[in-house]
Image 1 (tube, rainbow over the protein chains, first blue to last red):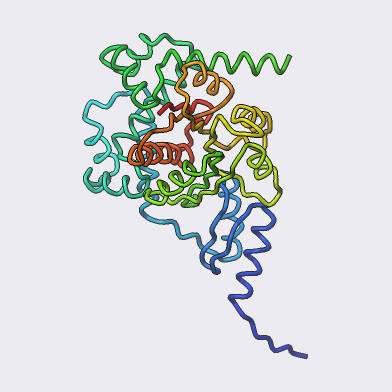
Image 2: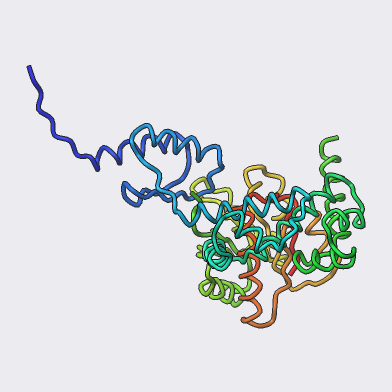
Length: 187
Length: 148
C-alpha cells in the first residue's frame, strides 16, 4: 500500500515554531514564518537554546551583519577598558586596527545600531568599571583614578558626575546603605 | 536577537504631565511603547495582572493619590518578579534627602520634572538611550544610578 501526501510547508513551519517556542514560556509574536518578535528580553542562554533547537528543524538564523560588527566593537571596547591595558594608540586607531575597518565606517554603524556614539560607549564602560571597583574592591578614588589612567581624581569625579548625575562618593554611600538594608532584611 | 523597542509605563496623576510625556516619546529615535496609569493603585494592579507584559522602565511620580510613589517603589522592589524593571522617579521635588532616599530604596533614576517640553525630550532621550545600553550591553543594573 502507498500513501500519497501533500504538505504545506508554511503550515508545518508555523506549527513547529509555535510548538518549540511555547516550550520556552516566552511571550512572542510570529510575524510570519520567517520573523519572530520576542516581547521580552531573551538571555544569552535561552537564545542559544532557541537557535540550536530551531537549527535542528532546518531553520537558519539570519543575524544582521551590522549587529555582528557592532557586537565586535563592544567586545573590543569592554576588553580594552576592563583589562587595565591602556592601548598605546588612540582608541579610534585601536578599534580600526582590531576590526580591520575604517573608524568612520565603524563610528557611523555603531551610532545607527546602538543610538549612542563609540566615544560615549567607552565612557559608559569606564564608569561601569569605576562602579565595579568602588563596590567590589574598596579601592579609594585616588587608586581608581591612577589605575584607569585619569589625570587626577577631580577628572574622574567630574566625568562620573557628568554621566551619572551623582558624585562617586554619593554613589558609594547609596550602595552601602542599600547593602545595610538588604542585610537587615536577611537577619 | 533583542526586541527593538522599549516598553514604558508612566504613573502620574497629572493629566497634562501624562500628555507631555507621551508626546515627548513619540519624537525619540528609539521605538517606545508607552502606557500610562493615573495613580499608584492602578500601577500595582497593572503590574500584578497576569496578562501584563512587564515594562522595561517605570516612570514614577512621587506624589500620587491612593498610593504614593514611595510605597509603589517599596512594593516593586520587594517582589522578585519585578527585578528586571528599571525604576525612574519623576518628581517636582529636588530635595537632596528625597533623592538619596529613593536611590537607597532601589530607584535607578531620579528625574526632576523640567519646566519645558524641549528639556523633557532631551532628558527622556538620554534616559532611554542609556537604558538601552543596559539592556543590550550587559551592564550591571544594580549599579545603575542616574540623576537628571
